[in-house]
Image (cartoon, rainbow, N blue to C red):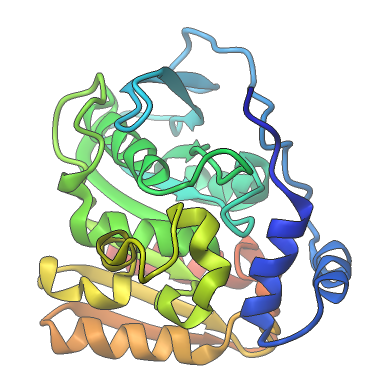
Amino acid sequence: MAHGPSRRLLAVLIAALLGGCSGSEAVEATSTSTTVPAAPATSRPPPTTSTSPGTTTIPAGPATTTGSSLDIDAEVDVPDGEGPFPAVVLVHGGGWVAGGPGVMRPLANHLLDNGFITVNTRYRLTTRDRPGFPEAVDDLACAVRFASAHPASDGSVAVVGHSAGAHLGAILALTGDEYGQDCAVAGSGLPDKFVGLAGPYDVSRLGTAMAAFFGAGPSTDPEAWRRGNPQLLTDQNPGLEALIMYGELDGFVDDRFAREFHDALLDSGGDVLLELVEGARHNDMHHPDLVGDLIVTWLRR
């Protein structure tokens, strides 16, 4: 039986992002700075048959490594009015071990109000018994396929991810067609655009704190660490359109992650915008009052 996410694992990951604080300090920092409560990692809302508006369940195929069948739960909402509409897949943070769609719901609502189909999705988390890679990216690739194929969609999909969700979204934006091959929805897992909010992109800098996510250390499985490091993948989708945003007062993820990833995307020929959000802390970076209008303007350009 799979266990829930480990608090200690989350503390270690956040401690690595902070650059050396103790596990207890990391847990305290998480609890005091988080302003939007995350849903429990194992909770799933009851599926419905509604697609506009409301919550639906995205059917997924068997997991690529376990062979078990899982559903990807997502809150799917469609704007009022006559479509078709562009779609956005939202990817929550939580240190790869926690979180849920509730974290991104205010931003999803802002995008919905501005004419975007929103697919605010869960993905498989890292637990004591199961690494998060590659299954988390498989789930997100399936969400992209669902969003593109939605009856009200114009076929275009942007991925917006925060923190760990930005890391996962970046993998997807660069190599999404390598994932989700068992998804029940046909099509491409590669989104058209990517928005990264306070993401730790070069995970090699986090060291062994990421071993649980990959299921092995970098010397044991260097290929997984390469495939799961967006900093090393920028040449895989040289035409990517990306908006990379970071907070002035982040406190968790150093701004070098955003700057260096932006530079690597630019060097690979991407159409990339780097934006500093003044006065924003790490967990402010998914709040619509601070980032919503800029994201909408950039997606519409």
